[in-house]
Each structure stands twice: as structure tokens, then as C-alpha cells.
Image (cartoon, rainbow over all chains, first blue to last red; front, side):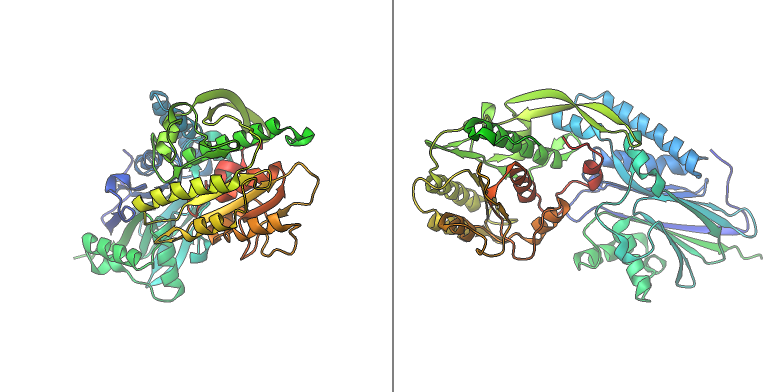
Length: 254
Length: 266
């Protein structure tokens, strides 16, 4: 485990919502949330529905990345993905698969990924994020959107994003789309890590100057119901939903 | 692509069509594969017609007419093995092993009893729709290389198109193929370019392409517009391939572009 990136000066409030597509079991959800508060790393991965074993690949990406100390530069991320992909393919090789599953497995698996690492050790805390695909990080201050990556407007989402591939041959074709960014945080700053459907919804609200911080005023089950209702009403596309909300607060000195 | 229709060989034509149909079934299975399971997003029937009308499935499925796609996946007649070259993601190519399952054999058998074949289609649809009244309506992909030898197919075509589910009417798409060097007409919106009465009849019993199919055509670089009918006349081999690709691409079911773009065309 890496060094603790939190400090006595700053407090981090973490909330999350994870919903499968309507009518699906939570075990079928291909969005995965990774949280390691000790390591101050948070990630969302969204397995591509038509890919082989997409949920497992998304799990590996989100859950292993937050525990890692590396994979925050282009080179280290590429190397980390290659290792994770090799481990996944090695697990598949132990299986006896029917011809269609074998064929699908040959193409590997695919997922969108976004991860952020916060450094709250100094008086001026910072963040560094890495993303590939259409899962997004939104950085907000005083109700305004400061930054959204890798996509920045609600019209940018389509059904064929570049994704993190488990097979290095396919990964090479998307690696150039990797986005890495960093910045400073202030007291009461918010971060949202969201999969595509919810990201489009958040961005649309910002574009309409109608940002709704549903997790600030509701507990997680109520927020989940809210997102379900938005989806039923057609305001969020019928897809898995993953949201991590991070709120940074300066501890009061007593 | 070499012209499999050259020399007017009915057998070569049948071989090509069987290859396209087997490839289409293979593609449907892969689209419905969710890790180790094939989900029954489709039920499929394949009919052939010549001296008679028959279910074209061979092997373990020979006695069945409408088959859930998971059963299609699990019961091919034969699986052939080969290698396919795909991009290595840089500037080279790598060979990967591929398997080609086969479900139907080529068959060429003289006459063209189109009315009888369409009547059999109607019968199958009526039975299936009684059990599946909800959801996306069935799509009929009708491929013919000649004029009907048992009468005018207009009425039976209309009867098929009048069937439906709570989500819409049955989609009937027709593709006429020809070895002659006559100009082909693909996905027209009106009859003005059609050469004769038979072509106009097929046009009239062809459904307009819904938006998801228009999008699939655009992806393949096939020109269509709102109002284009699922109809090809005097089609060539590439018309057949595109006809099946467009006709089986429901919205949301098309493979991600990454699956196709980096695969070398065969």
C-alpha cells in the first residue's frame, strides 16, 4: 500500500451510486467503481456491453488501479494495462470455451476508464487524472464546472468511443486517445467520476445552468432512486450508471 | 472480389449465397454472445425454394424451422478452421486462427415458386407472432435470382407486410440478383428506374427501411435516404452481402466500430 495522501488539514467526503440497466441484476452491471481512500485514488470503469467478459475487465481496471502506486503517466499506464490484460487473457486460457465465446475472447475485452488521484497532504491540494473512453471526471467549484475530461460536452457521447482494450494489438489503436490532466483544489471543490450516461446528464445540466448536486442533499439510496427516475423519464439514457462524488473540505482548526 | 456469378453457373451462385447466409448467421451469433452465453435476441428461420420449399438448416437443426439464435450457435452442421490476417495495430498484420461454422449447404434447384415460398413464410410468421406479439417485428430477407414461376407475388407479399407486433409491421425486404449486365437499382424511393412489371411488383412488396437500418446502410457506405425501400434489383455479389448486413442490423445491435475497422477485409 502506498503512502497516505490525506492529511490532518483536509477532509474528503466520498459518496457513490451504482445502478445496473433497468431490468438487470446488479451482478450484470458492467460499470464498476473503485475506491481506495487510503491511497486517495478513485476510478470508474465501464465495460463495453458487446465485448467478452466486459464486467471482469472493468473490475480489474477500476479496482486494481486505485490500489496501484503507478499508472498515472502515459508510459506507466500503458505498461499497467498490458499487465492487467495479460492476466485477464491468461485466466481465459484456462477455460474451455464454445466456438463463439472463443472467437469473442480473441478480440479481448474493452472498457472506458477514468481515474483520479488526490493529494491532500499540502496546504494547496492537487489532483491528477487519467482517462480513456467516455467515462468522465468533472471538477466543480461553487456550482460551476471548471473542467470535464476526456469529454467536455453532452453532445460528444456516441456509441463507438475509443476504449481501453485488454489485447495490446487493439490497445495500440486507442492509446493515443489517452487523456492525462492535473490541477489544484480548493476548499469545497467537488469531483464527479461518472460513466457515460450519467456524464452526459451532468454535462447537460451544466450546459443549461441547472446543476443539481443530488448527492449533497440525499443519501446514496435516495440518490440512486433519483437517477432511476431520471432514467425512466428518458432524461438519462438506459444504461448502467456509476457516480462517485468527492467533496474536499478544509478541517476547522479548533 | 471475383465475380461468383460469371459463367451463369447456378451452382456457383448458390455457393456464394450459402457462404453469405452462413456468414450472416455467424455474425448474429457473435453479436448475441455475452461472455460464454448466447442471448436469444433473435429467432431465425432460413428457407430455400426451388422444386419445393424447404428449411435450409442442415445437420442437427434440419428438422426445425424457427430456431432461437442460442440453438443456432450450439448446433452448426460443421466448423471449419482457418487463419485470418488482422492489423497488429501498427503497420503490420498478424494471423489469428478463426473458425467458420456452417449451417446450410448450397442448393440450386431450377424453378422459382416465389408465391409458395412467401406463403410458407407467412405461415411461419403467423405461428411465431401468435406466441410473440410484442417487441421488434420480424424481418424477412427475400433473395431471388429470377421471376416468380408460380404466379404474381403481390398479394402474398402484402399479406406478409400486414402482419406485425405491438411495435410495428413485419419488414419485408427483397433482393433480386442477376448475372446479366443490367444496371442495378438499390434501395430506391420510387419506381421510376425499374425496368419492368416484375421489378415494380417486388418494389411494391418491399418495406421502407426504418431509421436503424438507414444508419447501418450509411455505415456501410450504401446510399439511402428517408423513404428508401428495402429493395435491390439486378443486384451483384456485393449487393447480396450489403443486403444481409443492412437487413440484420437492428439499432443497438451493430458491433462496435473497433471490431470491424481494424480487421482486414477478406
